[in-house]
Length: 294
Image (cartoon, rainbow, N blue to C red; front, side, top):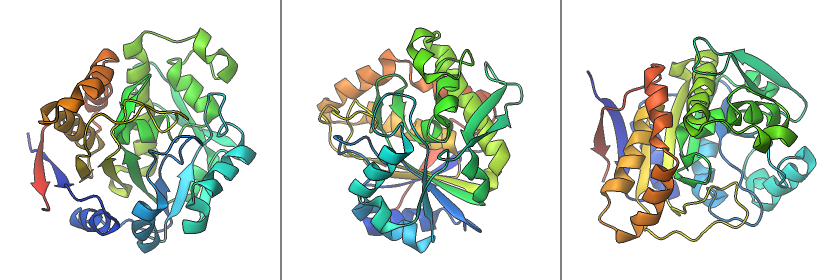
């Protein structure tokens, strides 16, 4: 099996972010959406405009997001817009809450649990996507990287609920009453990834994971735990499976003893199973080579 290429740099700067994107050798065409997490107000670990702004502007990109399925400020579009502005994204680049005015269904072919993925309708407006993710822990998924960013991240409120409940309900108020076995949730994220990639085309999507501020908690947490381990760097690939696997491996293999909390969070939720499931769907390879830019 040919190894997927994962580019890496320890340097986390606006310049290195541009450099690692250029190393991919892919030109994102047409109208470019840059999928990030805009971050729940109160938290501060999301990817800040000062870091990502230069790359977003070079791509003439639009920051794209969707509303959440939990009761926070980003569940309501009006409050979500305020958060986007408070966090500096609106001043940096055009922004789009893709499910603000509606949603659409994407078919899932041969899914583990889902027959459809429900996403913001404005996804149709973008020709290509830079999936720009903050790699960190997550209370439900174990960790969040590229795969979570294109499944839960691109899902509308109804879509996020559908993924979290492995296809049982789209009603956010019923989400926590219908949580499935953990692996079914993780496999449903892989199902949603399969739908988005099939819809956009694998050649029109690239993935950059910034492994900094490595909290055990997600950027959706308004009061995340402080990181216990040092930053690792930036990882980039045209393969979403490989880039997430590489980040997971980098945490596990880090010499930093502070990694213990994050490893416990990832493994206690069986987080690597999302990567396993996505690989089974043919979305990428868990076998990769690191190409250092340092």
